[in-house]
Length: 486
Ligand code: ZN
Image 1 (spheres, helix red, strand yellow):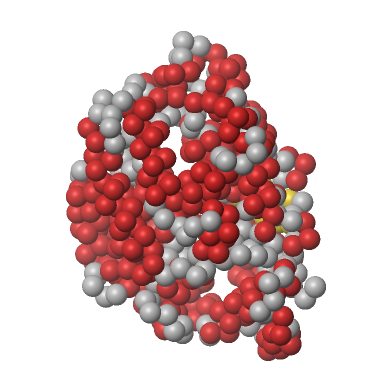
Image 2: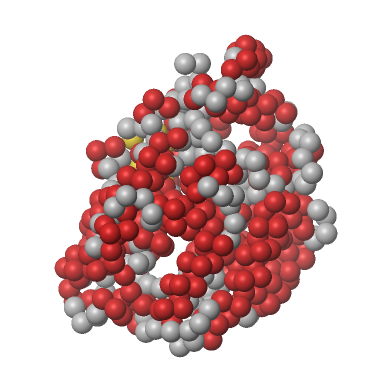
């Protein structure tokens, strides 16, 4: 096969090591090594020889077979690489790595002004990048990369329909009495957190024969090949970071481990989009991993790992606490209900900036105003405001947040359909997730990148993506948990 993804995997191994075990002294050389591999990758992707090979195979592109899908994906990849001049690509890579270092300090010192000129430059580079494409909106060049086939316009209208219903639900739940979470401040030894993280990854079906789990600061999943798909987790004083971080990354990994082995190394040999990937991490983390039947099965093991901290905490109290809806300054610490408002704030601001309607100098103020109007939260500092997420400071500006909410919507729509699969709902009632995983493998995972996200959702669920399943999931679950009518 003409497309091997080995060079991409070489970069992934270097990156995995950088984020887990690399000593400080190796950082500079590692940046150089990664830069070299990504340059070679770009050269190969935009080479006339590859373009010719894809042209020669073009006759197969309309074919409904796997080969047809390979040709279409390959063409997308080659055309995207050819549109962007190599100098601009490497200027953006270099700028991103310079910006990242300054962002770390600016966030630490709560100093937006320090990063502002670099962020302005990033917006300018991102606009120049998108000028090389013929999309309707400057954000579309990035949206199309992460969530192929979608656009600023289609996502805005989907988000508007979600937002209209979600805001009143969030406000009702925020007004209710929150469950007690004080037991999470007890002592949860780090080694026991790590042991439980391995236990829970195995419990959802992560295959340790084809992967491993290590520690990092910001957990991620990464693919080296079909036989080596790695996950990472983090430990802290609150054990829910490790528990749900691990289930989240295991969800990403189940997707990758479930892809048909015959697609390994082809352009179809990984998940089809950011949104579909997030649908799996969030389906396992939230819909399964925060359900009462799942914990009825696994709570005894959790108590065994932390007898002192949880010995007197009932399953019911634990379940209520891991589903509490609260005002969170930070996206990554927010609950599954209000989370989507955090995402929409970022998505809307990205569009306004790229359209030239909002200057970077005014970004902190615009951020804080939205946090106030959407979530009723006063933002005390930019470090906890527009500096909190790394995305704008380490990659092109735009198209980097919508996947999280698209994923939430898809997760509920996939789950609703999966629930009707043979034996799935009965097994889930006793906390057995194997039939669900089997169903998802056969219907979603095995295809890898064969179908575009919209096409996959339509095929699997029989209808286009909408906010309906997600909203009814929230209404049922949180209406019962909080005893309110949503
Ligand atoms: Zn994720």
